[in-house]
Amino acid sequence: MKLTSEELDMLEGKYGKAVQKSMEILTTLGEIFDAENMVDVYGVQIAGVSYANLGEAGLEFLSEIAEDGKVRVLTTLNPAGMDRENWQALGIDEEFAKNQNHVIDAFAKMGVITTCSCTPYLIGNTPHYGQHIAWAESSAVCYANSVIGARTNREGGPSALASALTGITPKYGYHLDENRHGEVLIKVNAPVNGTDEFGVLGKIIGEKLGELEKKIPYITGITNATVEELKSFCASVATYGGTALFHMEGITPEYNRYPKPSNITVEINQEDLDKTRSELIDEDLEIDFVSIGCPHASIHEIEKIARLLKGKKVKKEFWITTARPTKRIADEAGYSKIIEDAGAKFAADTCCVVAPIKGRFKGIMVDSAKACYYGRAKNKFKVKIGPVEECVEEAIK
Amino acid sequence: MCGGGNKMKLKGRKIYKGTAEAEAIVTKDGISFYGGVDPDTGKVVEVGHELEGKSITGKVLVFPTGKGSTVGSYTMYRMKKNNTAPVAIVNKQIDTIVAVGCIISEIPCVDKIDISFIKTGQKIIVNGSEGTVEVK
Image (cartoon, rainbow over all chains, first blue to last red; front, side, top):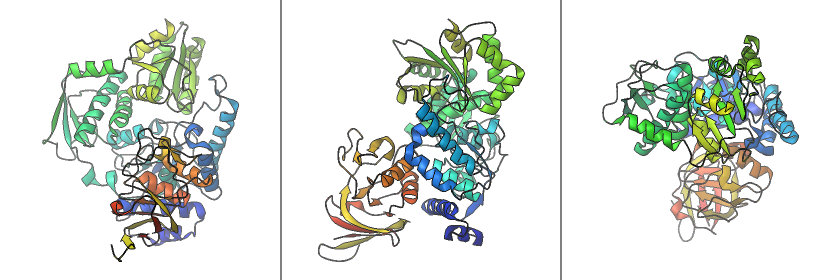
């Protein structure tokens, strides 16, 4: 790899231990993937924040890095294992809370903005079209590459942190034009509406790409899509297919930048949507938990939930997971009061995927196909997917 | 490959510096450090894995490539701190999880090695700085 003199100095330790370790990670990755050089990044999103995943060793690693490491670019964090203000009400134990706070403190010491959200693009860590970034968090990577047209590989926790501390990433993979072409033409021949249905579509396409051993779909037949629908789709297609980039005709900014693929075509019809939806509804289901906000709920979604809950009382545990800045907007707009008066709970900074809630509930209802996957695999819940309206109805009935 | 008799030296690619000499433990299966290995005991716990129930502590771990969650890099770091880590890693093709895990845990690592030449129980020397593996 060709390194600049500053990059060589960083690798030799002239900028301290944390920067040196970071450069070792980045140059090794660059050499593995045949990058010719590094590229400056505008921003970083770090994953590996929940203490449930990091453990004592992860915390120790981060504390060591925090001794002399300081971020050089705008850097935000993925969800943590708990709401930092409201953890007791959500049933998180004190020992976990203490350790989780140590993790977040270590990041804060490095200058990371400790927002703890999987939707950095909704709360100010928002790159522009064509900008290079280094993001972890598979759903946000997919959103940034596809919906915004920024450029990032799927980073892991340590490699994203390494980019934050150096401001660079090796230029390979999705940073290069030649790796961003659509490979499979996906024709959607049925209307797709709502966050849940976009999640269902994401599962179909993700699994189909896995079978074909392809990475980048070019999707036609979608006439309209909201930010919320696209974020749900991104989370699902990334979960079920490892997809980091898609093009959607008339919707995403790069769809006509590269040739439309013509070798492989996949058709998706109404019966495919129905069949896949039924796969996301378990039998012998007893729902005792409803959760909305995977990925983190936008202010638009919170406004809608407040409208649906106004004057009602929930009878089941109901979480709305979101970024704390979004929650603050909801507080000021009066939505939080309506939602909390109905007995629902905000879980800011965290989500139903990373919080330590394994086995606490029997069945979960969500509007997210990603939440179904982790609800089953990680938390051993039975699951049901449905539109936001039905989720709220389930909670109050 | 060069050398004669029982000795041979395989040339691969440097992933992380340092040298180590130990007994090899070889598998044809991929390894997922997150969930697939118990960082407290150093044993492989993935159900159905060729090495299920075997300890990788203190060995040179030889396998085709890594798999699974990126949290696996932190699991490797935890094993190093617990003294349950392998002393070196040899891969056919490195993946990012194991590469980053070796760097943060300072475990010598070499890839692009034809691992069919290495058998479990053989003494081998890994030179991560030169990218070589010597079978004694």
